[in-house]
Length: 113
Image (tube, rainbow, N blue to C red; front, side, top):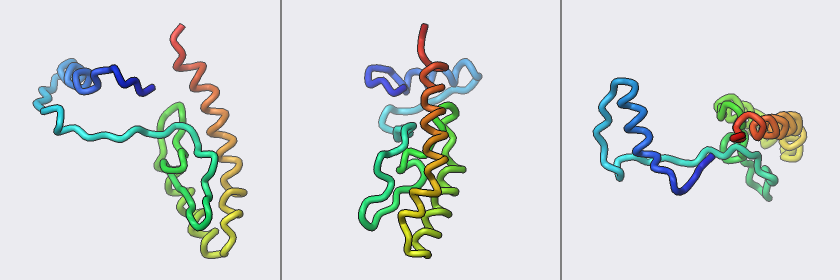
């Protein structure tokens, strides 16, 4: 879970040292983006179809998203080709249901006791 008060760069340097690497960086050399782990409620908006990580299609347990990016892009392209964007939502419904279930399990596995 992202926490604003954590020294992520310091943690990266410490982890690197434990692995035998010297990480010589300045704080402004590192750029990153937060990985969404919760599907968006609205994956279709007017003439826009959200795919992959932008649609929140990332496995909450493994944070893997390449499969979902490729799959949703394929389904989205077909929906656009068929001029039926609602089909996109219909085809992704089982995927969204599966990710919702994985989100539930994530809370169990990653909750501190």
